Every structure is written in C-alpha cells, then in structure tokens.
Length: 289
Image (cartoon, rainbow, N blue to C red; front, side, top):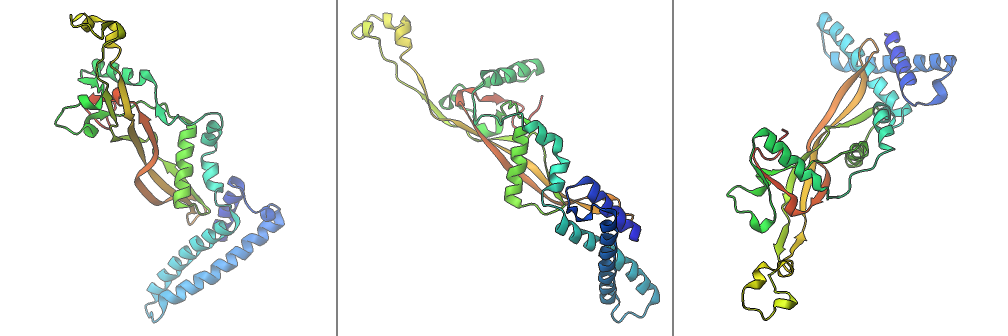
C-alpha cells in the first residue's frame, strides 16, 4: 500500500506545480513516510468507527479494507489541498488551449459580419430548407414565436473565447486544488430578444415638395428619404455545459479523473445583432446543417 501512496505522490510531483520541498530524494522519502503514517492513523479511526459493537470477524476484515481505501483517498486529497496550487491541475490540463488563446482575441460584442446571414441562406438553399432574412421586426407576422425559429448566427469563436468562458466559470464556482473545468464548446445560441427596428415615413425631396403629378413616386431621392432605424439591437445569449473534475488516485496509485459537478445552461456570452440580419426558418434554433 505504501507503493500506492508513493506512486500517487510521484505522479503529482512530475505532472503539476508543487511544493519544492519534495524535490530531493531524501525529502520525498520522508514525505511518503509521514503521509503513510497519517494514513494509517486515519484508517484506524475509520475502522474503529465502522466496527464499534461488531462481532462478526469477516465484517471486521471487510471494514479494515474499506477503512484503508477511504483513508488513502482522504490522505491524498489532503495532500493535494496542502501542496498543490489551486489552479495547477486546471492550467496543466488546458496548457495548449491557453497558449492558443494568448495569440487570439475574443469576438466583438456586436455581430456585424454581413457574410454570416449569407452563409445561412446558402446552406438553406443547398439543404432544401426555406429561410429568409427577417428584414425588420415590424415585418414578422408568423404565429410561431420568433425565438423558436430564429437561426443562430455563425460566430467565429476563438480559443480566447473558450478561455474566457472557463475563467468566468471559475470566477462563479471557485476552484479547489486538484480540480479543473471543462466547457462544452462551441456554446449554444438563444435569441433572447429580437430587438426593434422601424422605417421612417416617406417624404418628397426638395424638387418634389409641391409636385402632385406622381413623378415623386419614381424619384430615387424621394425613395431615399425612407430609412430603417434600429432602435434596439437583437440580443443573442450563449449557454454551455460546465463540468468540474478533480484528480484522484486508485488503490494502485494511478491517477484517475472524478467528476465533481455539472452545470447545464450556463451563460457564457451575450452578443448583439442588427435585427434585419436575423435569419428565420426551419429547422430552427439549435440546428446545424
């Protein structure tokens, strides 16, 4: 069993930042001996609690094995909490992602790429689905809520966006030594608000102010008097699934991953969009085709 403790500590020492006190061979041997001794005391306490009043010898033996197993886990968990920095495992597991994020930027808060809606329309045509640009919130007249059939915008997420989501989750939930976070990526889009836009009234140009002949109807300058005003941009919210993991060690001292918690529907970003660029049509929200 001492070998299991030693292997667990070796794995921690080799894989993650740690207290430099255990870097020398002599200090490491002393550390293993001290931790093993604490483990044995704890196992004895566990066993005593499990077998109080127990008269069945076989049950007592089973309790001894269980007490040793629980003491191993508790002792190593205590060691991780005392000697491993809180973010050490998280940063090690995501080292490549964080390196990519350092050379990228998060996407802007407003979606203004005119090609995003064009990409949806092209895919719709190829797939045989009927879609159209909203054009303006005042033009929408379907019986279905627009939030149910608005197609999510194509967002060119970067590594910096994923890192920002991870960091936000850590800020919200907190991170303990030995833990790391994962987010399902890319996130899922939800139209939170379609925004509001309207057209200004038609007005004749200076040349046709007093012209009642109807010529103004074909005048480009008169037509240009009608403008679309975006009073409130549409808002998309993006949610994902957050999973919190921690490292643990099996009875042989090999590192294993244990899931701590899962949070679904965790909002990681909000982006705005010109309401006129919202694409609506089957198959609707969450679709990928």
